[in-house]
Amino acid sequence: MSEFFTTVSSPIAYEGPDSDNPMAFRWYDKDRIVMGRSMEEQLRFAVCYWHSFAWNGADIFGAGTFDRPWTDAAMDPMDAARMKMDAAFEFFAKLGAPFYSFHDRDIAPEGATFAESCANLDDMVDIAEAKMAETGMKLLWGTAQAFFQPRYAAGAATNPNPDVFAHAAAQVKHCLDATHRLGGANYVLWGGREGYETLVNTDMGRELDQLGRFLNMVVQYKHDIGFDGTILIEPKALEPTKHQYDYDSATVYGFLQRYGLENDIKVNIEVNHATLAGHDFDHEVAQAVTNGIFGSVDANRGDDRLGWDTDQFPNSVESMSLGVYQILKGGGFDTGGFMFDTKLRRQSLARDDLFHGHIGAMDTLARSLLVAAALIEDGELDALVEERYAGWSSDEGQRILAGEVGLADLHARVLADNVDPAPVSGRQEMIENLINRTIERVR
Ligand code: XLS
Ligand code: NI
Ligand code: NI
Image (cartoon, rainbow, N blue to C red; front, top):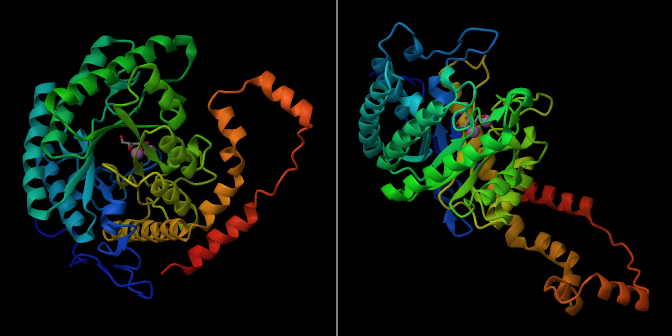
């Protein structure tokens, strides 16, 4: 296909914070070393196929607004898939993010039969493999779209009908094979419709058992084929169902433990899914790191006053720095990365708006990385937190934690010594000012 993004000719370059060029990076300098790794390795940016290329800008009230010729229903679906893939890889190469992610049905159309769907996917994976070799692009993760088709209206793994479970299992098997073939670093399962609308027609216990069984099958198959990427669950509190089973990181951890999966599955935390669960993004990261299940991030944000997944590009260094700080404290990304599960606004209909969205998001996260690294390297924040908990290093603190004393022992000691500790300042405002000074200072 001829060039699609004609107004952008060369890969986006780093020009530094003083640049006024809207088509340049001001903070994302991929080779710059931050805490021992290049920015490219720390951030591991990925572009999503679905919102960026498969979506034409339609919403529930209106038709598509974007200029995406391959979404024309009159086109042969496989011709359209090939045209879309040409444009997608052109975009990836020009932007300079090292990874991308897809749902099976984003890159290849569903066929009239399951066999035809598999053949379509295999054909498109051949093309993707060649384009990856040509451009050096890597796959952050693949995932099966098991929520769009009417057959999945009552869920995939949690469906009351075992044939739907079987269909979803077959689809995931094929998509995991495709992800493996393309060298995917992870495989994601977002519980699209794994939840319910009302308990009057739902057996929650059965549905959770079905989901536990499904995920055990996925883990088993991953080992069977030697896929060494990470299996990730993407928690979401609600939407499309009223009650999603994978509510948040803590809920997912409890679920994984219950079904013996806590060592085999990690989480892909989406910034706006944290918002929908009533949490801050850094809370979700810290929760996952604490439980040893932190995997990857979908970096799209929501809107404070809209209760749905608006999938906007991240643009706040203030809020993202705190999440990146928790990620770095946890050791940084292993197989995961920052994936842009982001949508342009419906009125952003110029072809190059897709560049502006990604450039701003990559710069926001690159600058957040510098802030988080500076906070860690300065050590002031750590020292304040250390000091706050210093008492736990005392003999008494250690004996409590080691299980050497119980309620009665503590009762006796508090009684005998009249233990009456004075409260101390938590220093929140002072620390918030320290963070703001760090944001102002990093270069
Ligand atoms: C939806 C999810 C979805 C997953 C991939 O809210 O974010 O896009 O990331 O299935
Ligand atoms: Ni997502
Ligand atoms: Ni989402």
